[in-house]
Length: 358
Image (cartoon, rainbow, N blue to C red):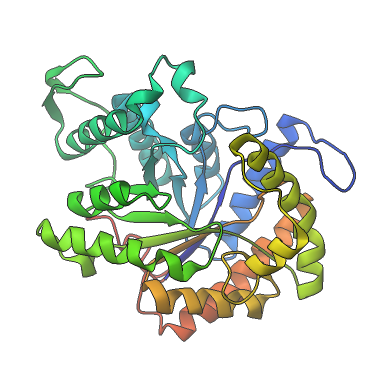
Protein backbone atom coordinates (compact mmCIF):
# COMPACT_ATOMS: atom_id res chain seq x y z
CA UNK A 1 0.00 0.00 0.00
CA UNK A 2 1.21 3.51 -0.75
CA UNK A 3 1.46 5.44 2.52
CA UNK A 4 1.97 9.16 2.90
CA UNK A 5 1.04 12.49 4.44
CA UNK A 6 -0.99 15.53 3.50
CA UNK A 7 -0.87 18.99 5.02
CA UNK A 8 -2.86 22.21 4.85
CA UNK A 9 0.17 24.23 6.01
CA UNK A 10 -1.83 25.44 8.99
CA UNK A 11 -0.67 28.54 10.85
CA UNK A 12 -2.58 29.10 14.06
CA UNK A 13 -1.45 30.02 17.57
CA UNK A 14 -0.19 27.01 19.49
CA UNK A 15 -3.15 26.30 21.83
CA UNK A 16 -0.74 25.37 24.63
CA UNK A 17 1.58 28.40 24.47
CA UNK A 18 -0.20 30.99 22.33
CA UNK A 19 2.92 31.24 20.16
CA UNK A 20 2.38 31.97 16.47
CA UNK A 21 5.27 31.21 14.12
CA UNK A 22 5.87 33.48 11.16
CA UNK A 23 4.45 32.48 7.79
CA UNK A 24 7.99 32.28 6.45
CA UNK A 25 9.04 29.90 9.22
CA UNK A 26 5.98 27.69 8.80
CA UNK A 27 6.75 27.18 5.11
CA UNK A 28 10.40 26.42 5.89
CA UNK A 29 9.19 23.85 8.43
CA UNK A 30 6.81 22.37 5.88
CA UNK A 31 9.61 21.82 3.37
CA UNK A 32 11.66 20.09 6.07
CA UNK A 33 8.68 17.85 6.80
CA UNK A 34 8.36 16.87 3.14
CA UNK A 35 12.10 16.26 2.90
CA UNK A 36 12.02 14.00 5.97
CA UNK A 37 9.00 12.10 4.63
CA UNK A 38 11.05 11.35 1.51
CA UNK A 39 14.09 10.29 3.53
CA UNK A 40 12.16 7.84 5.73
CA UNK A 41 10.57 6.12 2.74
CA UNK A 42 7.02 7.45 2.67
CA UNK A 43 5.42 7.34 -0.77
CA UNK A 44 3.33 10.50 -1.12
CA UNK A 45 3.11 14.04 0.24
CA UNK A 46 0.07 16.21 -0.49
CA UNK A 47 -0.56 19.93 -0.01
CA UNK A 48 -4.04 21.43 0.22
CA UNK A 49 -5.24 24.61 -1.50
CA UNK A 50 -6.93 27.19 0.71
CA UNK A 51 -7.74 30.89 0.66
CA UNK A 52 -8.14 31.70 4.35
CA UNK A 53 -5.80 33.16 6.97
CA UNK A 54 -5.15 29.98 8.96
CA UNK A 55 -3.77 28.01 5.98
CA UNK A 56 -0.78 29.30 4.06
CA UNK A 57 -0.89 27.59 0.68
CA UNK A 58 -3.13 29.00 -2.05
CA UNK A 59 -1.05 27.42 -4.84
CA UNK A 60 0.03 23.86 -4.00
CA UNK A 61 2.10 23.49 -7.18
CA UNK A 62 4.45 26.28 -6.07
CA UNK A 63 5.22 24.66 -2.70
CA UNK A 64 5.47 21.21 -4.26
CA UNK A 65 7.94 22.55 -6.82
CA UNK A 66 10.14 23.78 -3.98
CA UNK A 67 9.81 20.33 -2.40
CA UNK A 68 10.72 18.64 -5.70
CA UNK A 69 14.14 20.26 -5.56
CA UNK A 70 14.75 18.80 -2.08
CA UNK A 71 13.41 15.27 -2.56
CA UNK A 72 14.28 12.24 -4.66
CA UNK A 73 11.47 9.69 -4.79
CA UNK A 74 8.35 10.78 -2.93
CA UNK A 75 5.29 11.53 -5.06
CA UNK A 76 4.01 15.11 -4.83
CA UNK A 77 0.30 15.86 -5.07
CA UNK A 78 -2.24 18.54 -4.36
CA UNK A 79 -4.66 17.55 -1.61
CA UNK A 80 -6.74 19.08 -3.03
CA UNK A 81 -6.75 21.46 -5.98
CA UNK A 82 -10.08 23.32 -5.84
CA UNK A 83 -10.77 22.75 -9.51
CA UNK A 84 -14.25 24.31 -9.43
CA UNK A 85 -12.82 27.82 -8.99
CA UNK A 86 -9.63 27.46 -11.03
CA UNK A 87 -8.73 27.34 -14.72
CA UNK A 88 -8.03 23.74 -15.76
CA UNK A 89 -5.54 24.93 -18.37
CA UNK A 90 -3.41 26.61 -15.72
CA UNK A 91 -3.81 23.70 -13.31
CA UNK A 92 -2.60 21.27 -15.96
CA UNK A 93 0.32 23.51 -16.96
CA UNK A 94 1.43 23.99 -13.36
CA UNK A 95 1.39 20.30 -12.55
CA UNK A 96 2.97 19.34 -15.87
CA UNK A 97 5.79 21.73 -14.95
CA UNK A 98 6.00 20.14 -11.50
CA UNK A 99 6.17 16.75 -13.17
CA UNK A 100 9.14 17.89 -15.26
CA UNK A 101 10.91 19.39 -12.24
CA UNK A 102 10.37 16.27 -10.13
CA UNK A 103 11.25 13.71 -12.77
CA UNK A 104 7.73 12.32 -13.07
CA UNK A 105 6.46 12.47 -9.48
CA UNK A 106 3.53 14.91 -9.76
CA UNK A 107 -0.15 14.18 -9.26
CA UNK A 108 -3.35 16.20 -9.13
CA UNK A 109 -6.01 15.48 -6.54
CA UNK A 110 -9.02 17.42 -7.80
CA UNK A 111 -11.92 18.33 -5.54
CA UNK A 112 -14.87 20.65 -5.21
CA UNK A 113 -13.46 22.17 -2.01
CA UNK A 114 -14.81 21.97 1.52
CA UNK A 115 -14.21 25.70 2.09
CA UNK A 116 -15.86 28.22 -0.20
CA UNK A 117 -13.64 31.35 -0.09
CA UNK A 118 -12.24 30.72 -3.58
CA UNK A 119 -15.64 31.05 -5.28
CA UNK A 120 -16.31 34.75 -4.63
CA UNK A 121 -12.58 35.46 -4.81
CA UNK A 122 -12.43 34.29 -8.43
CA UNK A 123 -15.93 35.36 -9.42
CA UNK A 124 -17.85 32.08 -9.33
CA UNK A 125 -21.41 31.41 -8.18
CA UNK A 126 -21.74 28.91 -5.33
CA UNK A 127 -25.09 27.86 -6.76
CA UNK A 128 -23.06 26.23 -9.55
CA UNK A 129 -20.79 24.38 -7.09
CA UNK A 130 -21.14 20.92 -8.65
CA UNK A 131 -21.73 22.04 -12.23
CA UNK A 132 -18.44 23.95 -12.21
CA UNK A 133 -16.50 20.95 -10.98
CA UNK A 134 -18.00 18.54 -13.50
CA UNK A 135 -17.29 20.82 -16.45
CA UNK A 136 -13.77 21.72 -15.38
CA UNK A 137 -12.87 18.12 -14.66
CA UNK A 138 -14.01 17.27 -18.20
CA UNK A 139 -11.64 19.90 -19.60
CA UNK A 140 -8.76 18.80 -17.36
CA UNK A 141 -9.12 15.23 -18.63
CA UNK A 142 -9.19 16.46 -22.22
CA UNK A 143 -5.98 18.42 -21.66
CA UNK A 144 -4.33 15.36 -20.18
CA UNK A 145 -5.38 13.14 -23.08
CA UNK A 146 -4.38 15.33 -26.03
CA UNK A 147 -1.73 17.91 -26.82
CA UNK A 148 -4.12 19.84 -29.08
CA UNK A 149 -7.58 20.34 -27.65
CA UNK A 150 -10.96 21.31 -29.03
CA UNK A 151 -13.44 21.81 -26.21
CA UNK A 152 -16.42 23.95 -25.29
CA UNK A 153 -18.40 24.47 -22.11
CA UNK A 154 -20.52 26.98 -20.23
CA UNK A 155 -18.11 28.50 -17.70
CA UNK A 156 -14.95 29.05 -19.74
CA UNK A 157 -14.13 30.26 -23.27
CA UNK A 158 -13.96 27.45 -25.81
CA UNK A 159 -10.71 25.97 -27.09
CA UNK A 160 -10.45 25.29 -30.82
CA UNK A 161 -7.53 23.10 -31.85
CA UNK A 162 -5.21 24.78 -29.36
CA UNK A 163 -2.05 23.16 -28.01
CA UNK A 164 -1.31 23.26 -24.28
CA UNK A 165 2.27 23.12 -22.99
CA UNK A 166 4.35 21.90 -21.33
CA UNK A 167 3.55 18.21 -21.51
CA UNK A 168 4.35 16.12 -18.41
CA UNK A 169 6.85 13.29 -18.06
CA UNK A 170 4.10 10.86 -17.04
CA UNK A 171 1.68 9.84 -19.74
CA UNK A 172 -0.92 10.26 -18.49
CA UNK A 173 -0.42 12.62 -15.56
CA UNK A 174 -2.20 10.97 -12.58
CA UNK A 175 -5.46 12.66 -11.61
CA UNK A 176 -7.40 11.60 -8.52
CA UNK A 177 -10.89 12.74 -7.52
CA UNK A 178 -11.21 13.68 -3.86
CA UNK A 179 -14.61 13.07 -2.25
CA UNK A 180 -16.02 13.66 1.20
CA UNK A 181 -18.73 11.02 1.14
CA UNK A 182 -21.24 12.58 -1.28
CA UNK A 183 -22.71 9.75 -3.40
CA UNK A 184 -22.84 11.95 -6.50
CA UNK A 185 -19.08 12.56 -6.30
CA UNK A 186 -18.39 8.88 -5.70
CA UNK A 187 -20.42 7.86 -8.75
CA UNK A 188 -18.66 10.48 -10.88
CA UNK A 189 -15.20 9.17 -9.98
CA UNK A 190 -16.18 5.57 -10.68
CA UNK A 191 -17.97 6.35 -13.94
CA UNK A 192 -14.95 8.27 -15.23
CA UNK A 193 -12.59 5.50 -14.18
CA UNK A 194 -10.50 7.83 -12.01
CA UNK A 195 -8.81 6.95 -8.71
CA UNK A 196 -10.83 8.10 -5.69
CA UNK A 197 -9.47 9.63 -2.49
CA UNK A 198 -12.08 9.36 0.27
CA UNK A 199 -11.83 11.61 3.32
CA UNK A 200 -12.71 9.87 6.58
CA UNK A 201 -12.19 12.38 9.37
CA UNK A 202 -14.98 11.47 11.77
CA UNK A 203 -17.35 8.69 12.73
CA UNK A 204 -16.88 4.97 12.28
CA UNK A 205 -14.95 3.95 9.15
CA UNK A 206 -17.40 1.08 8.58
CA UNK A 207 -20.03 3.65 7.65
CA UNK A 208 -18.00 4.53 4.55
CA UNK A 209 -17.86 1.00 3.16
CA UNK A 210 -21.01 1.57 1.05
CA UNK A 211 -19.30 4.56 -0.57
CA UNK A 212 -16.36 2.45 -1.70
CA UNK A 213 -18.73 -0.27 -2.90
CA UNK A 214 -20.72 2.35 -4.83
CA UNK A 215 -17.52 3.62 -6.43
CA UNK A 216 -16.48 0.17 -7.60
CA UNK A 217 -19.97 -0.68 -8.83
CA UNK A 218 -20.18 2.62 -10.74
CA UNK A 219 -16.84 1.85 -12.36
CA UNK A 220 -18.01 -1.64 -13.30
CA UNK A 221 -21.22 -0.34 -14.86
CA UNK A 222 -19.22 2.17 -16.91
CA UNK A 223 -17.02 -0.59 -18.31
CA UNK A 224 -13.99 -0.10 -16.09
CA UNK A 225 -12.24 -2.83 -14.13
CA UNK A 226 -12.77 -1.80 -10.49
CA UNK A 227 -9.83 -3.93 -9.39
CA UNK A 228 -7.55 -1.74 -11.52
CA UNK A 229 -8.79 1.52 -9.96
CA UNK A 230 -7.05 2.61 -6.76
CA UNK A 231 -8.88 3.87 -3.72
CA UNK A 232 -7.19 6.15 -1.22
CA UNK A 233 -8.24 6.93 2.36
CA UNK A 234 -7.37 10.35 3.83
CA UNK A 235 -7.62 10.70 7.61
CA UNK A 236 -6.38 12.67 10.60
CA UNK A 237 -3.66 11.15 12.75
CA UNK A 238 -0.54 11.60 14.82
CA UNK A 239 2.09 9.18 16.17
CA UNK A 240 4.28 9.42 19.25
CA UNK A 241 6.52 6.90 20.97
CA UNK A 242 3.91 6.37 23.69
CA UNK A 243 0.13 6.42 23.40
CA UNK A 244 -0.26 8.84 26.31
CA UNK A 245 2.22 11.23 24.70
CA UNK A 246 0.32 11.11 21.41
CA UNK A 247 -2.89 12.10 23.17
CA UNK A 248 -1.18 14.85 25.14
CA UNK A 249 0.32 16.30 21.95
CA UNK A 250 -2.63 15.94 19.59
CA UNK A 251 -5.63 16.77 21.78
CA UNK A 252 -5.21 20.57 22.22
CA UNK A 253 -4.73 21.43 18.52
CA UNK A 254 -7.46 18.98 17.51
CA UNK A 255 -9.99 20.58 19.86
CA UNK A 256 -8.91 24.05 18.74
CA UNK A 257 -9.25 23.44 15.00
CA UNK A 258 -12.35 21.27 15.08
CA UNK A 259 -13.98 23.75 17.44
CA UNK A 260 -13.26 26.64 15.10
CA UNK A 261 -14.54 24.80 12.03
CA UNK A 262 -17.51 23.53 13.99
CA UNK A 263 -18.54 27.06 14.97
CA UNK A 264 -18.52 28.04 11.30
CA UNK A 265 -20.62 25.05 10.26
CA UNK A 266 -22.94 24.62 13.20
CA UNK A 267 -21.40 21.41 14.53
CA UNK A 268 -21.50 20.49 18.23
CA UNK A 269 -18.37 21.60 20.08
CA UNK A 270 -15.63 18.96 20.24
CA UNK A 271 -14.81 17.33 23.56
CA UNK A 272 -12.28 15.01 25.15
CA UNK A 273 -14.91 12.27 25.16
CA UNK A 274 -15.46 12.71 21.45
CA UNK A 275 -11.72 12.69 20.82
CA UNK A 276 -11.35 9.45 22.78
CA UNK A 277 -14.21 7.86 20.83
CA UNK A 278 -12.63 8.88 17.52
CA UNK A 279 -9.25 7.39 18.48
CA UNK A 280 -10.77 4.14 19.75
CA UNK A 281 -10.13 1.03 17.64
CA UNK A 282 -13.28 1.62 15.57
CA UNK A 283 -13.02 5.41 15.29
CA UNK A 284 -11.67 7.51 12.42
CA UNK A 285 -8.78 9.21 14.25
CA UNK A 286 -5.38 7.50 14.03
CA UNK A 287 -3.70 8.96 17.12
CA UNK A 288 -1.50 6.77 19.26
CA UNK A 289 1.73 4.85 19.47
CA UNK A 290 3.03 3.05 16.35
CA UNK A 291 1.28 -0.25 17.12
CA UNK A 292 -2.09 1.41 17.65
CA UNK A 293 -1.80 3.16 14.30
CA UNK A 294 -0.63 -0.03 12.57
CA UNK A 295 -3.60 -1.94 13.97
CA UNK A 296 -6.09 0.69 12.84
CA UNK A 297 -4.60 0.95 9.35
CA UNK A 298 -4.84 -2.82 8.94
CA UNK A 299 -8.41 -2.82 10.26
CA UNK A 300 -9.38 -0.18 7.70
CA UNK A 301 -7.67 -2.14 4.94
CA UNK A 302 -9.90 -5.11 5.77
CA UNK A 303 -12.88 -2.82 5.24
CA UNK A 304 -11.86 -1.01 2.08
CA UNK A 305 -9.07 -2.99 0.38
CA UNK A 306 -7.60 0.39 -0.52
CA UNK A 307 -4.28 1.01 -2.23
CA UNK A 308 -3.26 4.30 -0.61
CA UNK A 309 -3.47 5.90 2.83
CA UNK A 310 -2.64 9.55 3.56
CA UNK A 311 -2.51 11.00 7.07
CA UNK A 312 -2.99 14.65 7.99
CA UNK A 313 -0.78 14.96 11.07
CA UNK A 314 -0.95 18.71 11.61
CA UNK A 315 -4.70 19.11 12.05
CA UNK A 316 -3.82 22.13 14.18
CA UNK A 317 -0.54 23.74 15.08
CA UNK A 318 1.93 21.17 16.34
CA UNK A 319 5.51 21.91 17.46
CA UNK A 320 7.77 21.24 14.50
CA UNK A 321 10.07 18.85 16.39
CA UNK A 322 7.12 16.70 17.50
CA UNK A 323 5.74 16.62 13.97
CA UNK A 324 9.13 15.53 12.64
CA UNK A 325 9.22 12.68 15.15
CA UNK A 326 5.73 11.61 14.10
CA UNK A 327 6.83 11.55 10.45
CA UNK A 328 9.91 9.54 11.39
CA UNK A 329 7.83 6.93 13.22
CA UNK A 330 5.32 6.79 10.37
CA UNK A 331 8.01 6.09 7.80
CA UNK A 332 10.39 3.84 9.74
CA UNK A 333 8.01 1.84 11.94
CA UNK A 334 4.37 2.08 10.87
CA UNK A 335 4.59 1.96 7.07
CA UNK A 336 7.01 -1.01 6.89
CA UNK A 337 4.92 -2.98 9.39
CA UNK A 338 1.71 -2.32 7.48
CA UNK A 339 3.22 -3.37 4.18
CA UNK A 340 4.76 -6.48 5.72
CA UNK A 341 1.35 -7.46 7.06
CA UNK A 342 -0.20 -6.89 3.64
CA UNK A 343 2.49 -8.92 1.94
CA UNK A 344 3.92 -5.92 0.12
CA UNK A 345 1.60 -6.63 -2.78
CA UNK A 346 -0.26 -3.33 -3.11
CA UNK A 347 1.37 -0.03 -3.99
CA UNK A 348 4.68 -0.76 -2.33
CA UNK A 349 7.47 1.83 -2.36
CA UNK A 350 9.28 -0.22 -5.00
CA UNK A 351 6.47 0.60 -7.43
CA UNK A 352 5.86 4.34 -7.02
CA UNK A 353 4.25 4.70 -10.43
CA UNK A 354 1.69 1.97 -9.91
CA UNK A 355 -1.27 4.17 -10.73
CA UNK A 356 0.11 6.26 -13.58
CA UNK A 357 -2.07 4.68 -16.24
CA UNK A 358 -5.46 5.35 -14.70
